[in-house]
Length: 121
Image (cartoon, helix red, strand yellow):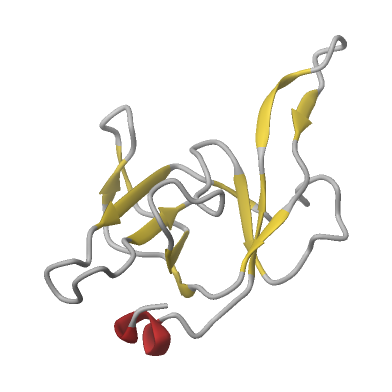
């Protein structure tokens, strides 16, 4: 963890529920939930744009540090919720659907540092 992230990502964990496709009966199919151990969290966030270029105000914003190819990085349409909920095989109604993901390289501030990610619901 970078020196910058060590003090800024003090919340967590956050649970992510992967989703992808449907079964033969049309029901959503998802992968096993996993944890992002340390996140920065805020309710809401600044106005953002999703992949369809639609403006929205996030309900929740999660920030964390990970390599670009890390399995911790979720995808759009997956679900996320603050706390450890890995005992639940499916995302609860209180989990939020991910609308947008952004990342920033940190090399200019800390050479060799991991990129910072921002996940908005």
